[in-house]
Structures are given as C-alpha cells and as structure tokens.
Image (cartoon, rainbow, N blue to C red; front, side):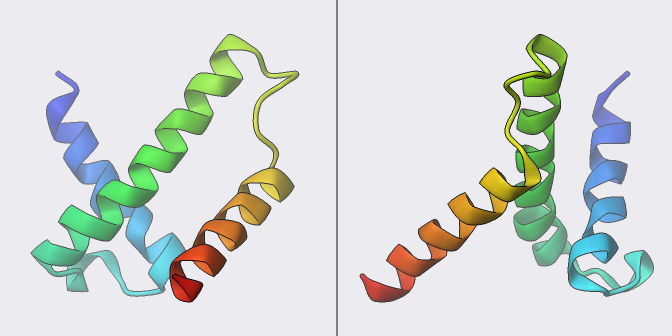
Length: 75
C-alpha cells in the first residue's frame, strides 16, 4: 500500500530541489537524487513524530550539509 506512493514521492520531491519539472526527470536522477532527498525528509519526519522539541532544525540541517560537502570537496 505504501510502495507506489513512495515512488511517486521521489519524483514529486525533485522539482522542489532541482527545479526540473517532474515529467522531465530521468530514471537515474529519480533513483539517486530522489532517493537522497526522500531519505533526508523521512528521517526528519520520524524525528518530529518522536520528539518535535528536539528534532533537527532547518539551520542545523543546512549547517550539517554544508560541513559534509566542505569535507568531501577538500578530501
């Protein structure tokens, strides 16, 4: 019951992040970038369900991603 909506969610999320219309997303982008964004968002949703007072904030998520990218580009 959740498998098909999960697939649709991957393609639906992509335009929010990469600006490419959903119908123009290629399979590789859906299976890589789409899964990446979906995984991040699902993890954040779980945090909010369990303890919204201590869930990761947008600023924390942004700073964490900035640091990860910084290390990856300097490695």
